[in-house]
Image 1 (tube, protein in one colour):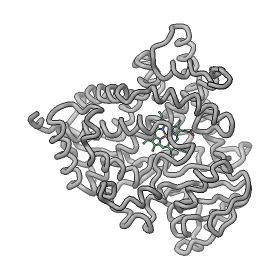
Image 2 (cartoon, helix red, strand yellow):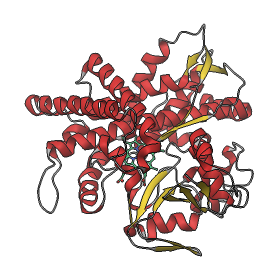
Image 3 (cartoon, helix red, strand yellow):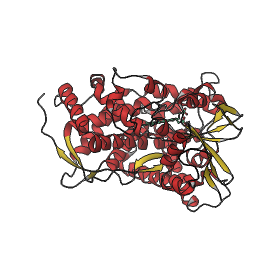
Image 4 (cartoon, helix red, strand yellow):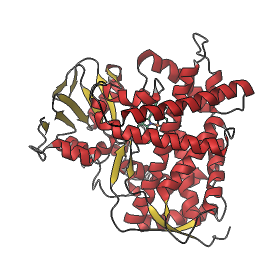
Length: 448
Ligand code: HEM
């Protein structure tokens, strides 16, 4: 089987499959940036275009978005998410987005914030400070608690929370193993596909059970209720139980791991690369909050915190690549993309394009200061996507990320347990492959 990158200057002749197997995010990024922001990868008979140039990204996601569907690479993910908002296309997507947008507007920032802060207080006070704590694992558990509370309020109890977490771990692990095979037709046998489908069926059954109980017990004022009550403004129809299952599955899976991963990378970047920026962040937090627990109203007074999180999302957008399929042929620059072509959209690559971001590998929150040149962040920055399919959970996830980082830096001194540079592992999101083992020591509380 031939595996080549079509023509990138720096990668000509390199065999692609080993590089993709090692780290598909890095391999696709190198290919795209070496070829002017649009590389064609060939794996045997399969061709995939990796797109990162801001002009082409805008065309695919905004100005000609109608020509692009989520595509065939998403089929393996559809096994889990069904026709939820992330995977749906066309008229169904449009209808669901219309139905769900108000539900998200009702998910008030204040509620998300108070759930986050409560969960943090409980979790941090239980930290064993004699040995390293894996911050990635901690952020994952915290975000599961938050997202489950937003979805189902506190109705489901600790045992079921544990079971949902175990099942979603199994689904993510299955997805990760299946990912390289997603480009292959469904009939090609892939090891582990049966286990993946079983985990999906089990998690789906749990969600159906929660929906049935809610219908029997009555509303609690959470996101599940908003979905159960949502009516299409034109037809007046509500969602079927299967559609609600798909949406809940989607929000659960899209919701917790992405935010946890982003906060973890930001901590890593501060600790490993810019302790001075961590010092400046701490100074801002101490000055604005004193020893007070952070609240959502404080966030506007913490501009440097916002810059730090934005810069973390530049270097490590939680979804470093996502997928599209061209319905009709399209022209991206000088290249014709044939009808039916599969595309990988790579914010990870765009965010590291030296034509837009000087010294792109450097972690520098100053890029997002009001005084800095805003061209790159207006044109070449889209960690939450762009256009009509932009992330519906962005405000929720930013609230969680900002408050988490504020609480953590306010309360603890942090030291990485290893000097080894963190490497990423791609499984839909891009995580530090060995977690983030970190020593945490309580700080003396600053005076109010
Ligand atoms: C740091 C955290 C997050 C990041 C970086 C992120 C990123 C993204 C991106 C890039 C897309 C667009 C994908 C595409 O165009 O194919 C997206 C869509 C989506 N996200 Fe997020 N997301 C985050 C958190 C969340 C949260 C907390 C939720 C919900 C609880 C959520 C739910 C969704 C949904 C449902 C979509 C599909 C929207 C549509 O197609 O209409 N995300 N997200």
